[in-house]
Length: 280
Length: 320
Image (tube, rainbow over all chains, first blue to last red; front, side, top):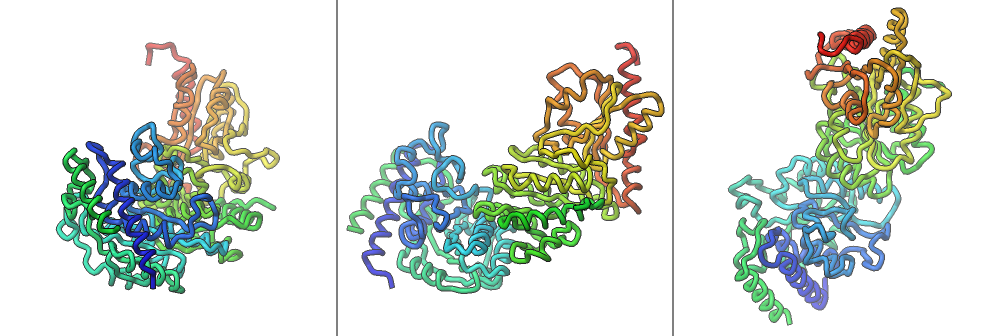
């Protein structure tokens, strides 16, 4: 079991990542707030607990890899890499400008700490599968973590990769489905319903763990289980709230990719401050 | 090693050789290994061979991951699937980060003569040429294939290799050193120049013979690196002649012909004629020669194009 101090630390980190999101988006700048915020706890648990990752040596060949298949939510990865010191904090305000190094989608050539090019949806799991095969061949200890969206699961390539990862018995590969139930144009149930997600992954040969994606303790337990699982990959299906932490954005498809008004920006900071007081 | 006259067999043997020389070489395939001959690698290095099932998109992006883990992946399918089915994966997962992945487009052009339109690639060079950073290679025979493969270990960034399914005459000069990016003069001639790639190189050499019998001296160049095209060498090859013919087993739109015209655009040059497939898909045929003849991809057609162009260029302007 995870100690309460670790849980507290990671809850505070997830909050800090949400502060960073608001710093990047500011007022009037369009950004994918909803899907970034829904995976703040997942990002915190991976980068600040589960992953073998030394920010002093971010090119260590034995590091674990984080791949954001739902690449449009890269703001949350920028936040984590900034808190790790891999991305300079001054970059946050220059996100998606020609002056900065933070692109609209993950770009390994321009941004420190980014491990691949993702964002054309459905490709991250395949890239992770290739990495995991390579690491196994070289007997490296590296593990690969891939985060996908639930809307993204309609991409056929994901299921090609799911079949292959199970066929190759890759237990050094762990995937997350950020099950926030809202995609670009509305609720997934109305736009393109994908029922029985857990049963689908299980049928494809994966170890499946369901968690509340905002419950740090549950995420850590699932990650520990994934590390112990032998002979097959693990998917952690994380039930989350799109726009989590910002009442006006929660479960609201508008904030899939939107800007904040000055009033919304003020409210966002207020709500984060209230959460900070809670976590004291 | 004696070069194999069958290009895909020569490819498979060369891949196996690379596997022996470099332990980071890995091969992926999508249930066509017996056709692409990547199976030769599998037999010796099963642990470095990944059968991906009939899933080309996943295969391409998996190769990106393997490259990011330090491997040199060669992925295999028919040219039409390797380039078309997996285009977005080649673009985003491999070419944007400039990864060292080798894409083997086998049974390219019309060389899968029996299977028809769905399996024949008439547009693969166009697609691959349009991808920033992609090297596009189309060897002329088994000998050149073997030499090309050796160079692919150190060549940076992604590369597409267009492999023919058939036996082709071994015409690449054995003593000629091979370099990616270089064009090869196979025959000199001062009246016309024939620039060709793949199966059309041999046919252009035959065309030069036909032309010689009519008193026309035609030079023949093998352009196996379609991209990056050695524009300077193309301009030099064209200097002094009165007609240029570009011959390729490919749609005339966007292939070697287009690349040559792009190279020549900034400099005065003789008239250019293109021998290729006229913007249509392939067909099933009883043998390879039959389908090449059907689409006018013959020595006679290349020779006729040269003569037509010479006639046109000797005629005063304003008359037709």
